[in-house]
Image (cartoon, rainbow, N blue to C red):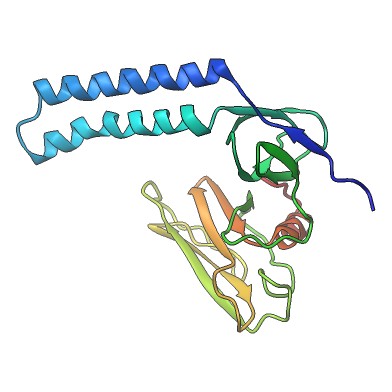
Length: 214
C-alpha cells in the first residue's frame, strides 16, 4: 500500500497581521458609527455590521491564516485552518484535500462527508449519475433542493433534469429511501453550483456533464 503523502500547515504571519488590521479597522468603524448615527434599531443594526466583520477577521487571524503545499502537485494553498481542514480544493490539480493536527492529505476517493462540501458548477443542461447521490444504491426518489436568489429575474428551465431560475432555484436530486440530504445549491443565478456529500458522486457528476470541481 502506498504511503499517504502529507504536508505541514504553517502560519502565514503576513496574512495573520492583515486579518488583525482588518479587525481593528472594522471595530473602529463600528464604534464610530455607534457614536455618530445610532438613533434607533435600524441605525444600530447598520453600526453592528462592521463589528460582525471585525469578529470574522479576528477569527480568521486566529485559525484561518494557514498555508501549505498541495500534497498532490505542490501548489501553494492559502487561507487554511491552522488546525483542521475539510474539502480544500487545489486550484491547480482540482483535487480535494483535508487534514487535522496541522497536516493536509488527499481526501479518500470514496469519502462521504457529513455535510455537502464537494462542489461543482451546475450547467443549464445536465444529467445526474445513476444511483443515490449519497451512497450510490439504486435511487427510489428525487429530493428537491433549492436556494433563494435575490437577483433572479428570468426563468430558465430544462425539462426533467434542468433547473429553474427565478426567485427560487431548485433541482431534484436522486436519493435512495435511506437518504434525503445529499446535496445543496449555492452561488448566483449566473454562476450556480451544486454541492454533494459524496466525493465519488461529485466526480461522477463532473465526468458526466463535462465540468470540473470548484
